[in-house]
Amino acid sequence: MKHRAIKRRNVVIGIGATAGAAAVGGIALNANAATGNASKSSDGSLVFDPDAYTELTTTVTDTEGTEHAVTYRFWKAITYVSKPVDATYQSLNVSVPVEIDGTAVDASNAPILLANSVGGYMPSSVADATGVGGASMGGGAGGGAPTSGTSASPTASASASAPGANGNTNATGGAMNTNQLLALAAGYVVVEPGARGRGLKNSAGEYYGSAPAVIVDLKAAVRYVRSNKGRIPGNVDRIVSAGTSAGGAVSSLLGASGDSPIYAKHLKEIGAADASDAIFAVGAWCPITDLEHADGAYEWNWGTNVLSTGKQVDQTVSKDLRSQFAEYQAKLRLRGLKGSGFGTLTARNYDEYLLKQYMEPSASTYLAALSDSDRETYLAKNTFLTWDGEKATFTWDGFLTHVGARKKTVPAFDAFDLSAGENNEFGSATTANRHFTAYGAKNDTTGLSTKRVESDIPELLNLMNPMYHLVEKVNGKRSRHWWIRLGTNDTDTSHVISANLAARAENLGDEVDHLYYWDQGHGANTDPDDFITWIAEVTGYKKAGKK
Image 1 (cartoon, rainbow, N blue to C red):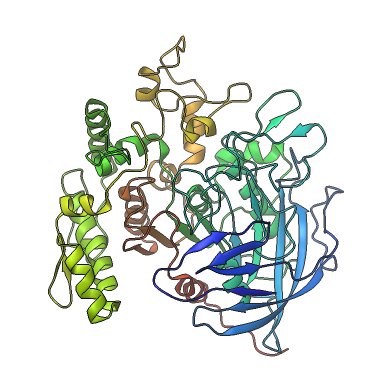
Image 2: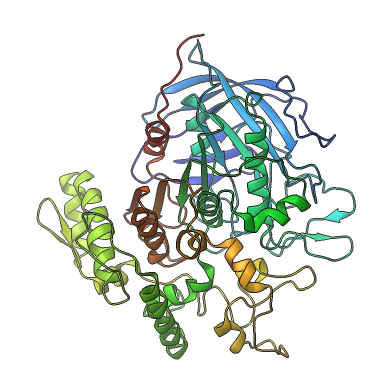
């Protein structure tokens, strides 16, 4: 079987019909190279068994179109906590290359790519994977049989596309497996953790996957890997997290919150290993994060854009939320990236900052790569844009018109009728959906008796927001290397969300590589080869030679 990842600037990644199958650029990626016995730590010892693997062979086509024969060892569905709530989701797979193109490789000191497949804050499982890149979404739909006494009943079907999911993402908006395949072919160790997610319900009718379950589980997975230093191949001090959409948010959160004490009781409850949960670097694609401020940021960005129906959202609500964003942004006191020429970023200058720092450079790169005839055609169709032969320029209003319809109604995240996925993410054990902002609760339309957020919500927001660990409680154990990507046409959240994350990390002295893909939508990943190279650069890894 062959894994293919074709290089082009408009890479399209889609999901296949079964676990372990996907498509990159319209070409099938199949991980079903062989089958073998699952490796589990069912005795609760949390000790990795280095001998409990199946050896698989596959072919990965890199982004230059070159095929690579890869032989790797595959450990399947290892439960990473000693007291799992549901081992169907609280388990991970490990893939370690041992031979690439006929040459034996030693991955004992290689970087470890921790690739989550979370989308929409839904459950993810590796239980049915038959090889690298085979995690599945949406809980029971492909996640294997739940632990005895539980049932998987997420609120959204895994077979139905989540809002914003496109050819680059799986059914719930999480990443496809391109990064994992290229990392394996580069000689890296790949760890793919499952995690609980919103909508999971046990036999007593209680929800057990709401916030903060997803981040607690991923932290526990990191702790499992780090506690098995010397048993799991790879450098446990060079773990690089990767995720898309909600998975990008929790990847960022992993990086920002390493070893934060606010997770201690939650990790203890599930029997996480006694080890660090800090990671070395972050890869985040279109992170759906900073949720308590996301409604205001969304309206600041997309408030004047119409819905796909051609209708405009309630502008009174939109203006209220834009005002809230302006107040929040002012309090952050963020500065533009070095060399941007921008000082403090505010609601008044953020449009110009996004244009000069991200949008115009992105359009310029795109146009420069086109043939003369294709460029002429594109410019004729997009007259909002001026091209001087080297640089593209345009106005913010022109950009908004170019993008077109907004993806979400208002409010985008804390819906007045509790219909948003994020309302479900902040549900409790006994309540499926809850408000998590004062504005959402005040304007509730479902008939709630109280118009206030519940008392546990503030703590949950801190547990789920990387900005808490970067702004309010600056974390000295955070990742110092950040790879952040977003499509310019992605209206699943505001462009300022990832830009704020990047600005804050760099303001703290961290190394940040952040750019926007021109004319790309949600989940785009058009430079996966550059990400794999970046991992080697920031980790200082030099591929081991022949054994």
